[in-house]
Length: 186
Image (tube, rainbow, N blue to C red):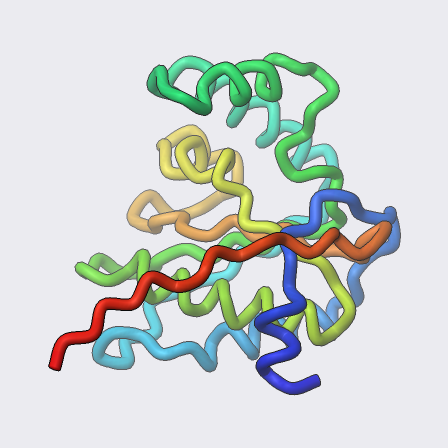
C-alpha cells in the first residue's frame, strides 16, 4: 500500500471484532510511531499497551464520570451528555487494544510530538488491515492523578493520544472532506 492510499483510506473505526491483535503487530505499529519526527529529536514518548478489558471498562466508566462533571456547555454538550449517560456506551468501543502515547519529558512540543507518533501508528495500523480511533473522551481523565494511577503511569507523564486498535467489523464509510482553504502569499 502506498502512502497516499493509506492517508486517503484510513478512517476512525468504532466497531471491532473480538479478535486479539498479535503482539508482533502491536510492536510493528509502535515501531512505525517512533519513526515520527520530534522537536530537537527528543523522542519524548512512551507507549502503554492495555489489553485488559476489565481495566478498559473501568477507565471508560471513570472517564465518563469525569467528563460529565467537567465538559463545558456548548453545541456538542447535549450529544455528549446523551452518550456519556448511556451505561452501555464504552468509550473504547470494546476494541481489543488501547495504545496510549504519553509524553515522557516536559517540553513545549510534547503534544505535537506525540500526535505525530500517533498518526504514524494509525497509518501503519491501516496498512496492516486494522482499524484505529483516537479517543478524545479519555484524554482529560487520563491526565488527572487518578487516571494516571489507574494505568500505573508516572506522575510526570502527559497522556496525549489514546488510540484504540483492532480488527474492524466492517470498513467505515468514506467521509466527505472539505476542500482545503489555501492562502497564497507571494
